[in-house]
Structures are given as C-alpha cells and as structure tokens.
Image (cartoon, rainbow over all chains, first blue to last red; front, side, top):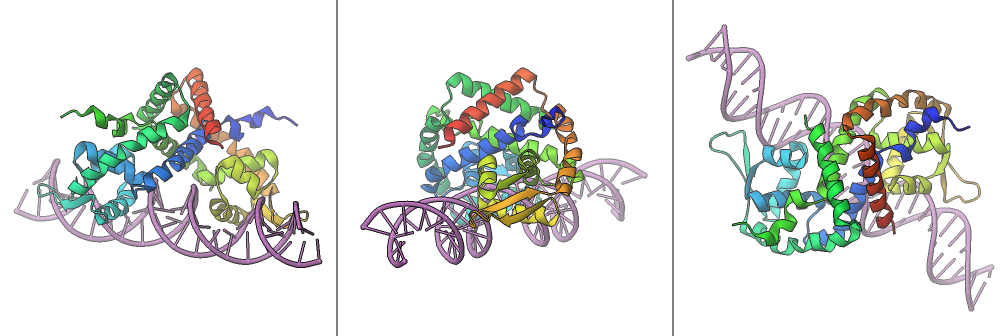
Amino acid sequence: MDEPIYDAIKLENQLCFPLYACAKEIIRQYKPHLDELDLTYTQYILMMVLWEKKTQTVKELGQALYLDSGTLTPVLKKLEGKGYLTRSRSTQDERSLIVTVTEKGEALKERAVEVPRKMGECLALTSEEAGLLYGLLYKILGRLNR
Amino acid sequence: MDEPIYDAIKLENQLCFPLYACAKEIIRQYKPHLDELDLTYTQYILMMVLWEKKTQTVKELGQALYLDSGTLTPVLKKLEGKGYLTRSRSTQDERSLIVTVTEKGEALKERAVEVPRKMGECLALTSEEAGLLYGLLYKILGRLNR
DNA sequence: TGCAATTAAATTGTGTACAATCAAAGCAAA
DNA sequence: TTTGCTTTGATTGTACACAATTTAATTGCA
C-alpha cells in the first residue's frame, strides 16, 4: 500500500510546513515577553524598524516587513493610539504617509532590548546552526523577492 | 551614533523575522497553484494529513498541524461544505470528533500531487541546503514542543 | 496644457490564528 | 454513586494577512 507517487504530498516531506509551524511556535514563545510591553509580534517588528530608522513611509515599512497597507494601516493606528508613533502626510507627496517614532516609542526600546536576550535561549541552536539557518532563510527571501 | 547595545533589537539581527517572512512568502507562492484546487494553504495541509491517515480526530489534526480547535473548527466546516471530508462524533468517546476523508476528497489528491512539483523550483536551494534547513527547523520544533 | 496611467494608502471582505471561556462527556477517588 | 477533575471541541473576541477595490495625488506624454 506504499505508493511512492504520493510521497511528495506527505506533510513530513514538505519544507514549507516546518517553516510555517516554526514561525508560529516561535512567535508564541515571544508572547509572554511582548505582553509585558503590551505589544503583539507584528507591532514589535514594526517598532523595531522605527527604533532604527526613526521615520519611514508606509511603503518603506511594507518593504521592510513584507506586509501591505491592508495589514499595516490598522497596526499603525493601534500604535498611534498607544502613543508610540505619529502619522502624517508628506508635504512633498501627499500620497505618502510618514510614520515617526515618538519619545514614548523611543523609551519603549529600553525595555525591548531585554526581549531578544530572553528569547535566545529557547531556540537551542548553536551559533553555527543559527548562522546557517539565517543564511538559508535570506537566500530564499532574496530569491522570492522579484 | 552606533550603539552596539541596541544591535540585539535590529530587525536584521533577528532569526524569527526571516522565518516568519519566509513562511509567508512561500505560502504566497503556493496560492496560484492552490487556487486551481480551490484550497487555501491551511486547507491544503489539513487535507495532506487526511490523504495519508484517512481518519483523524480534531485533537490529532491539531497535534500534526500545530493548530488548535479555534482554528480547525471553521476550516473543517469549510472543507465539509466542499464535500472533501465528513465530521462525526466517536461512539467510544462522544467528546471526540472524527474527521474522515470522502471519495471526493481522495480524488482531489490526484490533482494535488502536482503542487509540490510546481513549487519545488521556486525555492532555489540545492538538495543539501534543503536537507539542512529541514533538519534545523525540526530541531527547533522538537525543542519547542514541550 | 490636459488627460491617461501610475502610485500610495485606505477600505472591504475572507480566512486564518490563538487566548480565554464554555459545555458536554468521561474519569476517578472517596 | 456522587462529586470534582480532566479532556475534547466549540464559541467568542482580538489581531493579523492579503486580494481586490477605491480614492486621491502625482507623473508622463501626446
């Protein structure tokens, strides 16, 4: 009853599935730490971009995070409501919305630096393995990004 | 202005982010192929389990897919509506819901075998790299799974 | 110049994801 | 056997995620 023709559609032979499951499970591990900051994972990675760049358009945020305006608009409004960023139209190009981190948003960074340290332990990869995984993932992302 | 203290919360230094982005981007690549089968990615991986096991409880599906009943219940109802599976309570234990693939669901497998072949090309990894990635992902999943 | 094509966000609708809670069923110890 | 604990799915509420459409602004070109 073993039909090798069908091996290709066995869950255990997929590469996408462990990728999908792994991402979800790791994000679940983040939750208790991010709850302390009152941030979701999506809000957290968005703030990460702003901590580094201070000011970005929605388009730039979308490119950095692989998210579109349909996802970003409500997340940005939520973070604006929390006082971590401001949203305003560009005077050069009224179509562009400029997102800028506030002082309160900057201050959050001080508490957020603890999150990667707390998370680091749970992956259980050596630094070589982590580097290898990192390289493979960005190789795939680079290939898909066109 | 380079503050190495903050390097840990740069997006580019995260391992979870490329994992999350990669999973999403690959699932996006699946979409045109899965559209031909009128399946979403979640529906597709659920059917994958049923193609192999024929019959599973919701609990077993949840363990296989890393999903809970809050996600599975609506997906199962949708697939039941499409005629690909049936849902019925176990007579041994009325708490358990037994999910069984139908003939129509089995038939879908014949068309689904083409999907992995069509997808294989877009990853652009050698088989060594794919094996390495696979191993690393399951190592993480194994560690997180307790 | 004037208008068609393009671009940037926002909106709408569908489909997950998951925490928290609930209800029903089974189990277990006194 | 009855009460309390556990297990299993379903439900509810919140938060993405993205395709498709809409709106407003800008650009390109005849």
